[in-house]
Amino acid sequence: MLLFQVAGHHFLGRALYQSQMVYLISKPKRRSVIEDNKTLMWSVATFHETIQCEELHLDLGRFARKGVQQDYRMPDVITVRVQTDPDTFQDVAVKIERPTFRKPFLGGFKNRITGVEFHNAGSQTIPKKRPEKGTTLFCRETQTVFQKNKRQQTANPTSTQMTKVGLYVSSVTDKLITPGKYFTAEEYHKRRLEAVIVLQKYFRRWHARKLVQKLKEEKRLRLAWEAQEELKKKKEKEDKVRRERERRLNPKTKEDFELLYHALESWRQEEIERINATLTGAERKAALCGLLEEEAQLIASIGRHKINADEENQHKAVLHFLSKCAQPKRWKAYDGKTTEMDTPYTLRARELLEIYRSVSMNDIPQDERVDVLLTLRCTVEEHACELTKEIVELIDREVDLMSREVKECNLEGLRKRICTLFLQYIKTPKFNPEVAKILKVPPHPLKLYKNVNFCHSCENYLPSTEFPVPANSRTIGRCHLCCKLDNEARQRESFLKYRLILENLKKSEADYQDDTKIVFLVQLQDLRYMIENIWGCQSALSACSDLYDLVMVRWDKQQEWSPWNTVLLTKDEADAHLKLCNLQEVKFNGLNLFPILLLHFNRILCVVMFGQSPYTHACLSWPTISV
Image 1: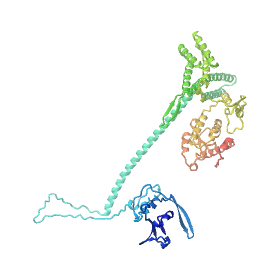
Image 2: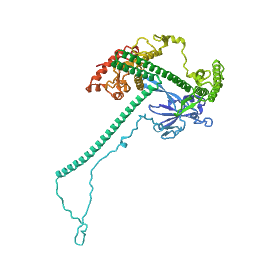
Image 3: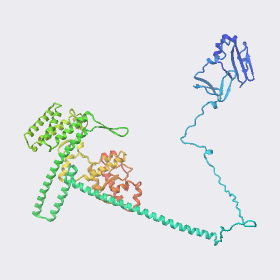
Image 4: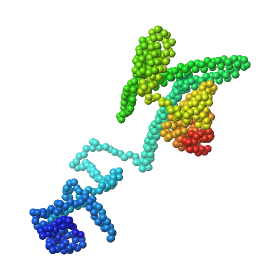
């Protein structure tokens, strides 16, 4: 193996000056000069022998000795041929890493002739880092403590000094000790056992007293909680009765009028039963006619209340609509604070809202009414159109009539016209741009043809949203308005209790967050049918018939809610049922299996009644029910 510090092309470049060049061949333990008529083959090198060739120029002024080494620069990538097999060679590309600083000499050797330094790879190369395992490791020898126990007994030398000749020791502080009664080891252990038994008695007494005090405290807290729950239930029941009484006296919503008609029907049935039980013949007919007249008067009174409630609800809906338009823009910042901003459109909507409130007010002095009308006139005169001209004419007419001292009862119709036209002015996006984001855009007439059904009762074509669709129905029946009128005229049933159960069911199913679908397809008529005809309006366990205290929950909470995966229970029973983990153990460990069998029978009925519905069939897979 030959190591040359000068490249071959350098030898060729110096061919013109061979007469002035001297080549030195260095071998171990000897050094010789190659003559001009000799070649490199003249230096016979054996295997594993290292020779070094060095070029010296005689003209040191023109050719420096180290010039060749300074001009040579190693390339960034070199190719090294490696012998992998006896007859196979492989070229490997080696990338040269150039240091950005001069490495300090930390071991190695240096060529005295050329001055080349050779560094040790172990001391000059950065060691390879071990991969981090995510846990801190310690050396066992340095982190482990080795203990060794060995018994030792040290000597305790003592001395006793006694009286003797020439020495006097005082006996004032001496004590006379007499030996006691000797007892054996058995007697000693017996005494120790008796002492232990005494200690155990006192400890067990203390522990029993603590346990009894704890049980008494738990019992006291339990009784206090039960009393509080009873008071809470009693108060809720009283509040419910009070709210129902108030809703019957001052009905405002549709549910209130349903309760009122239901109470009227209950009263009528009781009166008919009383008349049939006590009267006969002509007296009975006269009593039934009087009952019919009373019923007609009560229905007329309910109708008047309904008209007043509709007007009040409409006025509240209009104010809510205008307040929604006048709300400022709100957004939540990164720190959780809410920022509000008013735009020119919201300020305009707020101004119109204040004017509408002032115009719709009654029982205000005449001068204030005139100021409100003048403000309204200045507002609508900003835009010239037929609507604003009509509003201005009505304002002038009211001012003229008030100057003639016309009674206010005669001005009610005129004022309602002004309010109605001004509301139409507010709902126009040209005059109130903010209202365009809240108004419902009417659909295209061509799109309604595919989504319109015919009501055979009122004989009107209405959208499909105006028709109730029970789960087991195959055709479209009457619309919501016709069903409501039929209920008020005939059955007069109240659906408030069923509606509350359905709302609680939807709310509880939404909390599961498991993409349940069928519960939101169930109609009020379906739920009423299930409660009345399948569950008998009572709890499956306690037979409680108070619908205000009943709820519907999943029988198996791991499965999606469906008519055959539900059970009707009270609120307390539902809370306890949802805490169960394994229903099979609870099923057969109890002695009363009648509720379980009734539950399975009801589930089979639900499958028969609701399983053929296209909605439930598309949403759920068929259940497996075993009795």
